[in-house]
Image (tube, rainbow, N blue to C red; front, top):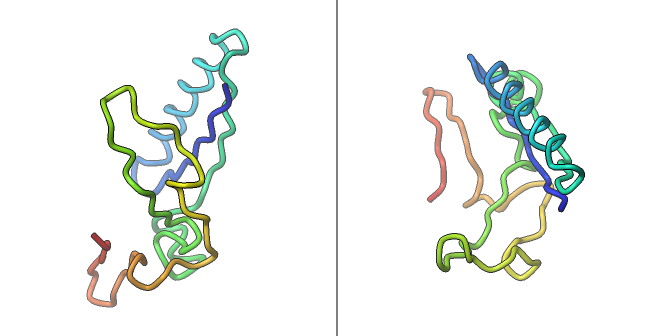
Length: 108
């Protein structure tokens, strides 16, 4: 089974912690005997993203999904019906913003 894993190390101890977490995932993948295939992609977030793009999380990395609900462990599969397409920039009501007065705004 193939799993897509998005990695956003962030700031502070984030890069070190995330690197170790990915190492654990890779070890689990190796121990699965080929039953698990991880496709890991690392994205820039936090101060590095702010310095490069002017935002802590680039707009292309913000995705809203419809909650799947259901019984724990028996939720419906993720399908195109409950995962929106990824846009280059989210609509304004979905954007995470950082204002000049050091305020992070996360939409509900």
